[in-house]
Amino acid sequence: MNDEFNYLMESPDEISRLDLKTGFDLVASQAQWAGIQPGMRVIDVGCGIGKTSQFLSQLVGPSGSVVGLDASADRIEYAREHFGGENLTFCCQNVHDSLTHLGEFDFLWTRFFLEYHREKSFQIVQSLTKLLRPGGIMCLVDLDYNCLSHYGIPRRLENAILQNIKVLEEQFDFDPFVGRKLYTYLYDLDFTDIDVFVGTHHLFFGDLDEVDAFNWLKKVEVTSKKADYRFEGYPGGYEEFSAEFQEAFLNPRRFTYTPVIQCRGVKK
Image (tube, rainbow, N blue to C red; front, side, top):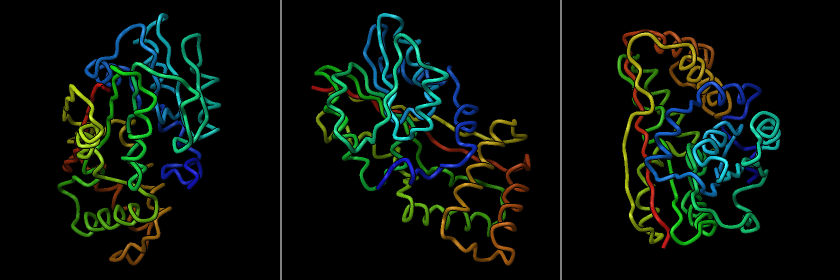
């Protein structure tokens, strides 16, 4: 599988979507909780457009360094043009290839990446462990019950979302439940000082702001058009489904939440 061309969210608007939804405060709080410190050598696996890598480079300061890794040539080119610096470099490479030429790191970070690798997420984490020096920290951040927790929406829409997610699991290796697996991954790989924090990534009630509305409507548009799902119960197919989703999701009555699970551990 070629990760770049099979990435579920690939679309002409993906760079904009990633840029809009990524903020410093949340990244900083998650990385600091995990133990990032000034002077560390850090790798950001699945760095996308490089915005998160830049935030991590600010946290390690000029005495530290960050390598952003992603399989998408377009996003790495964007990252180099917009976020590269003296202590921040980017590498375009498939995570399934050997990465040992990059050297050892003090802190390994991967956020919202393993959800796109359902079948091999554990093998990826196992392989990435080789990049950590003894005593290095691995921080895994991902979602659980992703895109599936809504109330106050029509029953046929709720069923369609569930069925669409199942198709994405089968056809695009998407894992809506990877968050709950992260602790066991580190446990099975003999990490020490493992800690877990469960928080809220999406919490929508009342009116949506423009960024959240764009992010969710774009996710539904891209994934629904890619999945081989016939939208049973919708005589008008995708267009009827999309119109109902937009009406329901922009209704301030609906309630939506998604848990985020952070897991960190220290390599022996």
